[in-house]
Length: 289
Image 1: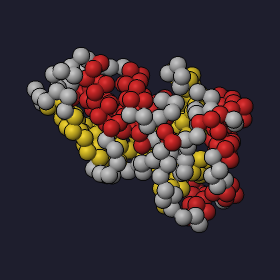
Image 2: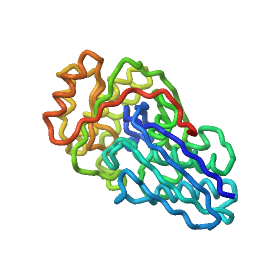
Image 3: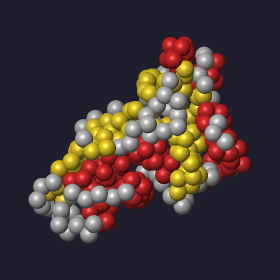
Image 4: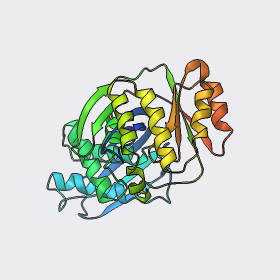
């Protein structure tokens, strides 16, 4: 048997980073990762390729496929060839790992001709992220926002969705992406834990439905704790963004702008070294193509 499937999963952006609290929030954006999985008759052999960034480690892909095969007790029956392609920059805080894990997990399940409920698929990807050591918290919030779209507030430690919120679609999401990479596993967690009481305020703000205020507050808190530049976000707000702040552990900054302020916010971000990506809010679930 050589089952094959292709899947698209979308990106996400931080509302509240879960590193300090073990709880977080994120929302979906229409950046994407596509995964193609072909099963082979070579058990234990998983060949992976990230066609959009060939130098990056493929360990997360391999661990995700392995987790799916183990879930169905088929790891002794199949291997796989996997290709992923993405327009999400890697290691900038833009949830490239969550989107990749979701896409690869769902594609492997589909290639096997099996099905699982959505949360079970997400949780396999989260476990694989721990296996591959690309996460500190499991990034369950990012994974859910990537998989389901819209805004999600989650308890990452217990892998539970606390609340799902719609996000207005008439807003544009801009990302300032600096040239340097920063891998989540290298984060100074102890230092970030010191701002826990402040992050709690941001989290409670998100629970009240004020997601943009929460995003801005979270960004300022974590940027300060990580010695990252807060002026990028402040300049975006001054230019008319409804929210702006660090995405994940950075170094990327998210700015959410109404349609009539996109150009001025983009111009503010372009004053800093790096590239500016433009996206829309995503409400679509990950799906088999």
